[in-house]
Image 1 (cartoon, rainbow, N blue to C red):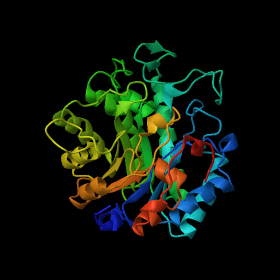
Image 2: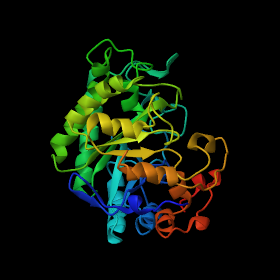
Image 3: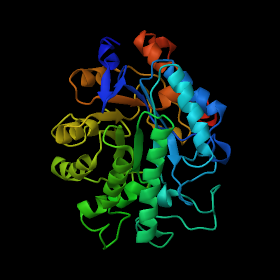
Length: 367
């Protein structure tokens, strides 16, 4: 390391929410909430990051109140009895001066109906019932079901504000439900929710607008999106900057405060002819703040981790340089923070040799 870490520790404000630095804990599914209810161990897990200079915590994906929203009964819900557990999480994080938002999630047809899921008797839900471009697993969602899910996202956002969360993130990435509507590979509808790019965005726009009606204009709202999908790593919503701009504009106007731009490797240019990554292009095109994410400070990318690959700590000079020139505004750290609660403090104190390597075994525990 040769660059100053100062750019990473500048304060930042999101729609009135003051953050002490640019470090964000990325949402990472843990399946450590039996019965969908986060316990004291989950609260302590997030508190440890907050007290070690993680400026903003975005929780693991939390599922909205729809019978087929979750992919595992150990994933935390964001309704009913689970809200008391989340209230304890908020109190513990706020107790050490931290900031925290839930990521609100519906997995769509990424749910394996035969897995360890709620309501296995019910088929999974997607815009066209496709789990992959050539794999039909259910009938297309009805308009009634679509409206129910929109209302469930809005209710969850209202509950988040009521129990003290500092904002919300909508999970619109990685081939889950909102992203399934975005992506023409899984959205074959010929009604008002499919066809053109704008029609494929209608579902997300209705969710954003419904959330805004519930929480007001002064409550931070982040949207996470990605080009790649778990069903196809090479998929792209937009193949040019012009198309990306067309995609982002209606979402921005609907009420998104910050775009969380998911890449597998944050340093990779998004389009030929420019070094800007996805977060850089998104900020340039919308004027809105952005979060970058993707293998920050680790040698290997996260999909390989699910295949058993470990990663060692790496330098962050490139990240700091991009922050210094304001290519993006915030940096989401995933596996490095999962394995090392003190990642932020160690970086601030420049104790790089003390950073922990990542092993897939870490996914099994709440360290």
